[in-house]
Length: 180
Image (cartoon, rainbow, N blue to C red; front, side, top):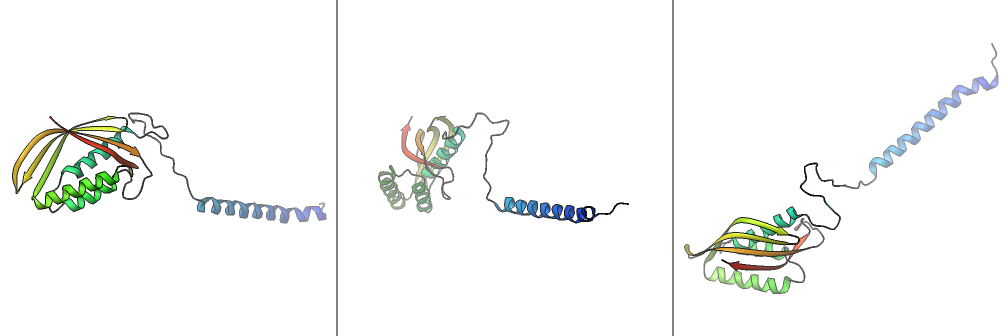
């Protein structure tokens, strides 16, 4: 057998190289695990439409406008303060001043006149950033039905950064009400 200095050093060199490689791989794994992750949202295979960057899906506009209308016209004198506060968070910055004053006037009239309102949505149509909600609106004064009418709410929205109180990332620019 030929035992020379080169053969005796090989096993320790191999073991050292393997140990060093394992330490480097472990360090890389730890660094990868601690790095912040990006989130990529993909539509499901059964999605109705494709999602494009910068485009608000019709379903999001529909849901946001429907929630806005339900907060806008479902109130009693006891709940109108909370509904008004919620509505103010849903308003666009450029529409906030005028709409905020109108909401405060409506709140005073509802409390002083003991008014309540109930809206029952019937259909919702979305065209881009505009949602049209056909509904049945009932107005009560002093616990008596004062008026019942079919109405159409047209709510126009715009994109804004999503926040905790407004996770939709939408805001109301204008709202019109048509009675039929």
